[in-house]
Image 1 (tube, helix red, strand yellow):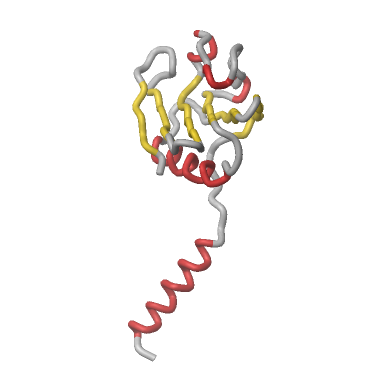
Image 2 (cartoon, helix red, strand yellow):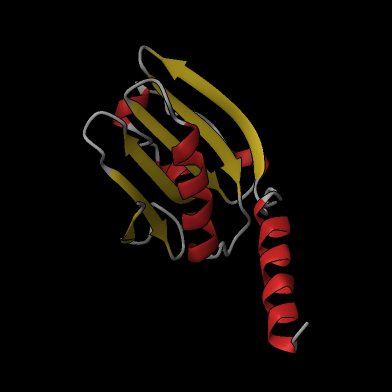
Length: 135
């Protein structure tokens, strides 16, 4: 066998082995809440979450959403600060104390395909959002 052939076999074996493994993300699940045909999942992500890793996480989550209309994934700085909004889920968080702890929000409308991740440099109260399309 040639070296090139062995290299190709090694790469194919490595890719196959890696594709079977589930990625472990640095986020802690807090809880989920469903209302009507919508749901919201709360996670903690620390003070400085990586936007690329958040986007990858949201792409994986999007694949899991097979029912319902609106799906929200909200990332808080700490697990103890993760709370649901005081109003219907589709209205989102609007309380200053809650917004000061939100680092990112992923919104997915399964019916029309809207899928965006909004990240905040400081938090949702003090910073303008930077949006990323999630395909």
